[in-house]
Amino acid sequence: MQDSPVFLDRAATLDLVDELTDRAADTGAQLVVFPEAFVPGPPVWIDALPVAGDAEWHALLMRESVTVPGPACDRLAAAARRASVVLVIGANEREHHGGTIYNTVLTFGPDGSLLGRHRKLMPTHGERLVWGMGDGSDLRVLDTPAGRLASLICWENYMPLARFHLYTQGPEVWLAPTLATAEHWVASMRHIAREAGCFAVGVAPVMHRDWLPDTLLDIEPLRQDAQEQGDGWLLDGYSVIVDPTGQVLAGPLVRERGILTADLDLSALPARKRLFDATGHYNRPDVFRLTVDDRPKPAISTLARATSGEPTEAPLHGQTIQMPGRSQPIEQAAPAQTTQ
Image 1 (tube, one colour):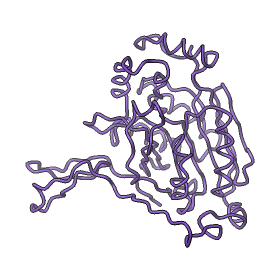
Image 2 (cartoon, rainbow, N blue to C red):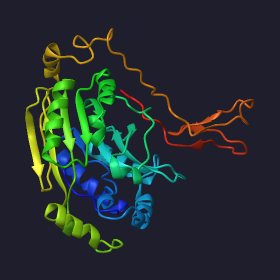
Image 3 (tube, rainbow, N blue to C red):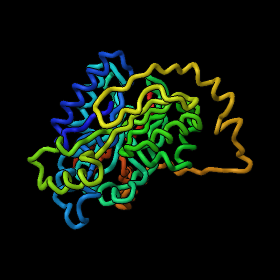
């Protein structure tokens, strides 16, 4: 799904997601994938404004970000359930009472259940002024009715060890929501499809300076930078769908809104793995070893409750925690889980 969010307007962007998801479902799609940070839009100001001049933009992004669980998450779940599709979408996410925004991809099943949440491990360059780092506990391939799905966000796909960790879990469709809107991203998707022996879907937004709303803060520096750097385009698209041999099935779609579709024959994957299986017969574990610490990384470990029978760690990615003096547990965001 290549489109532009209603920039920094969560409610309007969710309305757009409803519309586009229904439109994709009408084409017969079973898997619908949106770009990186689509709700409520990417921080495109990081290359146009000085570091000291973006505080208001950051505060607006924080206000419009998604909490998991929360009303926006419920809207996305409802969209997946209504269209009966697997819905994968990039979102700016924060904790309910947190002060950090995460670059997150959310996966919903056709019944509206939240199948997975992955936070980008490492924001790229200027993104580190906006997004925090994921803790690696959510690097999982998800079993879904649309196949086994792996998701890495933008330049995470250039992290070979993260890719290898997911390869060991047997992905059938590789999803790469991105802001890397250029021809080289197509080459990256073709390489990953061949290396993983699976289908690859690169999904990018498209955004023009004229689509930025006039009501947003001081929008002119962003429009001027877009004109100087890209003929008015902030983001060019280049969404693409690739088969396991590296052949392009659909796209790339450049500087236009649209829906790319393709029929993915998952039964073709074993033949490709016969030639090359990066974690099987073409691997040398006697020579190379990868250790992955995929445990949740709690922000704190509390000693006061250590003898009370209550949890002693407050997890970064949340779970149900019973707190002293409360009759009901606090429901925090559930960690990403593989469901079947």
